[in-house]
Length: 148
View 1 (cartoon, helix red, strand yellow):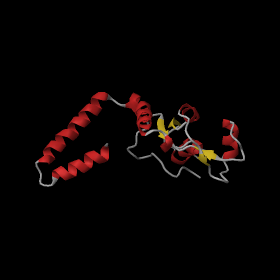
View 2: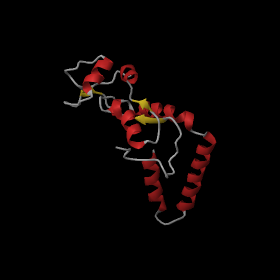
View 3: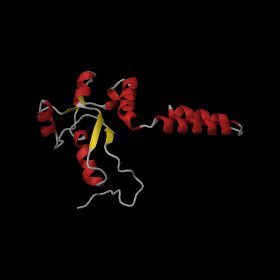
View 4: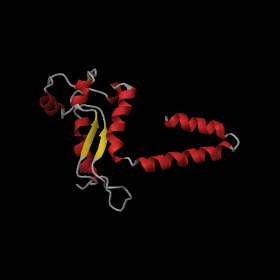
């Protein structure tokens, strides 16, 4: 069976590597392999977070894992976990400020500061234009709040 998704004839970029953010659990650890197999877009993905090292570094609390996950045995062996007690760690367990810092650090090498600055300036210019429209203040406030 071929890939379920394809980048052929699409405008997706094929820039490597792709970074992902996800929970640290048996199923989440398989996302990289599964995405590559299903899309045929990229040769590999890199996990930006949540990793085993980040779980330990931030002393994140575990949650009960998915009972019956066929990937659990291999995952527990790989990370020295009890094979009889599936556990998982949620990315949301990170402090929001630290989560933001880690995500920004993961993408920073791929951001052109001059392009970002130009885009932000363009957004501000458009907000200024809209401020003169009736009812625009409420719409701008909602847009700004949702992007923060």
